[in-house]
Image 1 (cartoon, rainbow, N blue to C red):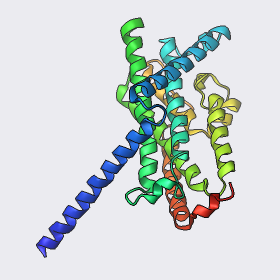
Image 2 (cartoon, rainbow, N blue to C red; image 1 turned 60 degrees about the horizontal axis):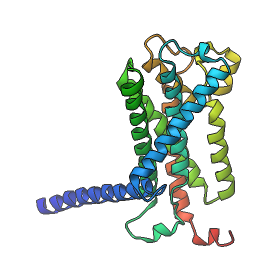
Image 3 (cartoon, helix red, strand yellow; image 1 turned 90 degrees about the vertical axis):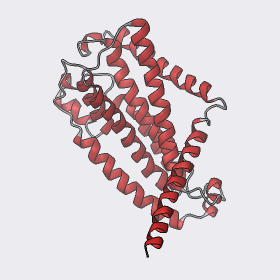
Length: 275
């Protein structure tokens, strides 16, 4: 009896280790998708981050919006919004574009959609964490020393922005086999709308109530404002909360898991035969 229990325990442990190993290799494969050389792929991601920060910095200067920013390091204010925005939208795009149940990769016995989703989400997080760390380190070492009021909370909100994007992407991925073109359009529109609706271009406490109502449906809007409250000592978010993106993330996770399970049971390779 004890040997059987020990065998089952060892079997579960071995299965867990095997699953983690497959997720690791699938994550590495996803990281190398953008470029055959992983280092070049990372540098391209860093360049995209720096480019977006530079664009918004110049736009703030030209539109004379610098006076509307939070009192403190202006470039850190810009980077806080850009980092959260990129992390969220890239997670949405990566997970919604992961291999689904009808993908040729699913013909390999060890592969399944759980591994595909986890690998897509983790590869996106890996690239964004490294890119943000490199940009912040270069700015801190070469330009100006930065101080983050609450680093632990800031990192937690950064992960929440990633998690909410990954779960939204999971819902889109599960719905994609039923309506491929429509889901791709919804994913693209959502990522483009977040250029404005994320709130990275303005301080929420300075907005009138009518404008806040246009954006508070967006979990990224709450994440960016709350992150700025954790980064800057003299800013306290009054109109956003962390509970809303947490609730949205959990709801999307449950909905995504249910849709993915249902889609996996009814998926057929013939769905895309005419496309």
